Length: 205
Image (tube, rainbow, N blue to C red; front, side, top):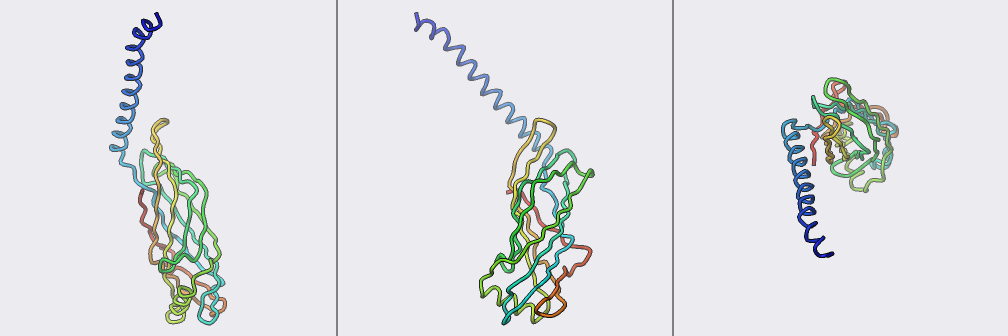
């Protein structure tokens, strides 16, 4: 009798499993089509200010500095809201990290509705002696040093109430030239481009 019941129930169970699979596939295909139509773009990052204070040399070795970076972040998508989550920020000199910071989650509504201003203040890391020496020599020869700023984080894209997707985010702000003034034991540097700032490249990875 039990076998008879199982035999009668088996087609129903198979139908239910097949229905669930088909629903899942339909939703997945539908979501993929929506994203292909909307073609989501990563947020635009722009460095509006990059300044360095208390830049100190000792025997031509850069031993101390305080970094301050101002970003403006915009959502280029007309129909997609973005959320950028906890992201790591690195200031680098010729691929050597000289400082590290982070910013917390923030929303970016659809294009034209808002933009986000972010300010980070970071202290210098302990650099390798060779990298610090090279930075010191560049400073002494030109009173100018080039830095890169990198951001790695997580972004969530949402279209409507039900369609969402998460992606890794990579931002690169290359060759930011900082011009220094003042004494070598307490110099102050400002971004050479001035009020125009510098645009960054942003990609989903």
